[in-house]
Amino acid sequence: MRKKANLYILRVLAQRVIGILLFLFGAGWALSVRSMTYFAMYLVFAVVAMALVHSASPETLAARGRIATNSPVWDKVILGLYWILAYFAIYLIAGLEASAAPSSAGWIFGVGIALQVLAFLLSLWAVRVNPFLESTSRVQKDRCQSVCSCGPYSTIRHPTYAAILIWCVGVSMVFETKYTAITALVIAVITVIRTALEDRMLIKDLLGYEDYAKQVRFRLIPYIW
Image (cartoon, rainbow, N blue to C red):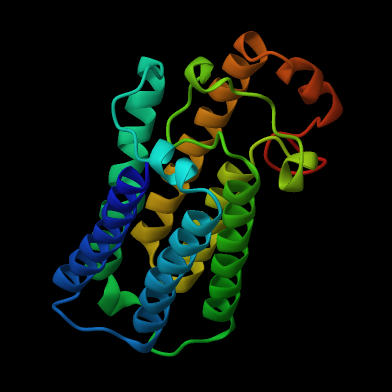
């Protein structure tokens, strides 16, 4: 189990490094203060999250590292598209647009960094309290899945997807370029679609989820949806 967890950690760190290299390639191997700040946080967040979750529940990391699962076809398509856009494409685009970004790190950049921290803390909280939080969308009958209603799940039903939406806004403010923001918007739309499809699947197939959905009414954004 720990071996699978360690392999997942290595995969996550490799994704981060490749994303940084793609940005550098697009930017002509130059880093500004804003990009250095963001990518330093990007790596530190990954290391801290992996260390904390590994110490508490290596089984969760091992489960998240599964690639071949019985998740629906729609999830495989959406997850693949999200993976390409969020880990690689957006950073290549940000690098190609780096010369168009503001030279100084103003208040917009500061708010963007704050949103990155918020997204990290929310996603970490969700992973720490929900042992069934795999990377793919499926009903985990093989793991005797039950409904998680503690922590952030007591307020919204999909806190990790909410964290992605916060990240999308934050990353747009960090880089402050047109096509980076458009790519982030596409990622956000994909995330909302995945949330709706996964929620429908869980209501239909996961015992107790329909009652949970009646108690916790909002999927992503409190008092909105």
